[in-house]
Amino acid sequence: MHYGLQAMCYSLQAMRYNWHAWRYSWPVPATPSSRTSLPLWMIALIVFGVLAILGITIGLLVHFLAVENRTYYYQGSFKVLNIPYNSNYKRETSQETNRLSKILETKMMDAFDNSDIYRQYINSQVITLVPDSNSVTAQIWLVFKGSRAMKENTKRRIESILYQMLSNHSGSVTTDPKSLRILELSKTNAEKIINNCCGRRARMSATYDRVKGGSNAQEGEWPWQASLKMNGKHYCGASLISDRYLVTAAHCFKKSKNPRNYTVSFGTRVNPPYMKHYVQKIVIHEDYKPNEHHDDIAVILLTEKVVFNNDVHRVCLPEASQIFLPGEGVVVTGWGALSHNGEYPVLLQKAPVKIIDTNTCNSKEAYNGLIWDTMICAGYMEGNIDACQGDSGGPLVYPNSRNIWYLVGIVSWGTECGQINKPGVYTRVTSYRNWIASKTGV
Image 1 (cartoon, rainbow, N blue to C red):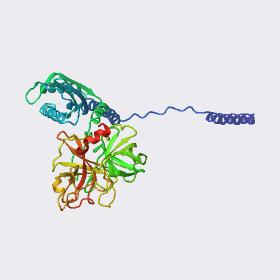
Image 2: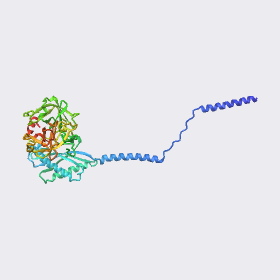
Image 3: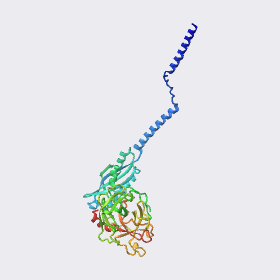
Image 4: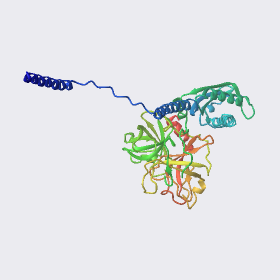
């Protein structure tokens, strides 16, 4: 009995240990961990950050929509009265066109400069003149800056200021305020209008820097400048005068007159070529003789039209009667050598020079009578700044009072580069204006 109870006790004790072992072998359900709440200062910081980002976003939107200045372009027209019909007003380079355009541009500039929106005014130009029986319609181009919020108000102020200007009949012209029309343009269409005009520059340097003695040109600064390449290598300069024609020097074709040997490119670098074009035809002046300097002019016809843009468009050709006086400031550009037999630049070079009196250029110490009336000298008698090898055929240009650029000369010849009493000699474009027209229709 004692042993039986003792065995029963041992049996119960074993069951107890087995129960505990079984119980602890069960999977124990996980108790949820207590969530630690963020400190108040951290919550406040997050809220502040979100509000700050929101505030900045709203502020930027307000700034760009209401404050940020944008550029706006406008095209307009109005009539100038009591002007008898004259077909010369159709020609953009005629004396009549320049005279009337200058008067109207001065009136517009004065009107806007003296207005309450003078800070927004950027530019105003006469684009074309259309003559009628007893009037001329001026088509104008305007540029202003302003916020989007003030856009409509600015347009109304432009119209109001121009209306008042046209209503004021003091001065040399009478205008019709009721004929005024103003239309907003897109940037693309505005650039097309200005780039289709000759001699305008969408991009300009602030100063004339001082190709010997010159400096790097900026993109679009001389949009008519072309590189005439022979077998892919820069050989001469040329000037774009229409969407298919260029003028250059006749002596550039001494080695070959085959159009297939030449290509034309634009921009400030000759390599890689920008807007590469092929040559269809070369027309050399009939009286040009190799190794002589007179009649040193040729025209190039391209196989396809040049698409004008801010960086590439045509220069104005002067009227045959136009006079460029000694002392006038002009600019020569090109990729020619930086000195006689020197290195060639990577970028297009520009150099401001002055027209030199033919008698001075023909003096004994200078060219001793070699300068014809069909030539023009430019540079400095003291030397230094001059065109050089590789500039041949390139442009010598002049800005008129409206800042429209005209082709005065074509780089032709000279004694070395930048020598004392040996300035550059150029083909005088006015002497060949009619010849150019006969070959190109320009």
